[in-house]
Image (cartoon, rainbow, N blue to C red; front, side, top):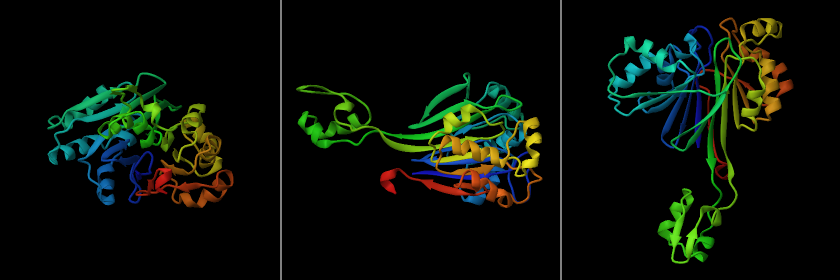
Length: 304
């Protein structure tokens, strides 16, 4: 099961009822944060989650509303006596940006490992989770992310027995390792069925609609996308500042054939996102206005 929580849904500046952009995903003991706007650690506390076990932070880009909460987050982790290394992923310039922010958080009891994205599309493997970064279209280098939990095919113990594999070695085959028996080498494909459907969440913000978004979000269980402007009359403003309207996000969700769309990263001038959702759902029926603390548990098909 993959837990996903929108910690903050605001763009540009925090509001009393809307924290700045951040998303948390938790799977099998691993916690991943995407963006860390001002107030993110307060949003975590409101959710009842702790920043100490965060293993990975991914940054879409380095505008303040997406990274200004990092120094405080690092200090809180340090005060919680964290000693495990923390991995950060982001566009080129990550190391320089983090070092600048750390002027106010210079001494930490844990190591920070910065991994800079060097390609338009790049894949990372982290604790059994696949992280895919893809470039989008904003005023500065900016990336969207897919968090994917893949599933191998079903293990067939009867095939393993026929091939003289000892039970103690079954787990090795399920982990993708070969096993040597008295009758020869047994490879995972000899005892596993076809890959099963996993879980996929795609997140993008601060961008105009792009083909890369549709391609990378294709078939996602959950697509979280910026909706800076609810009013369609703000389309020219969205184009000028390289953001999106609600309707444009809905068209992306429809083209990518995702299961569900959550809108996020609202303009401070947008008071009630739900007021615009009727027209959005005419384009994509499973569209929802995101709000701070909105959470879902995504399960594998066999668990439903």
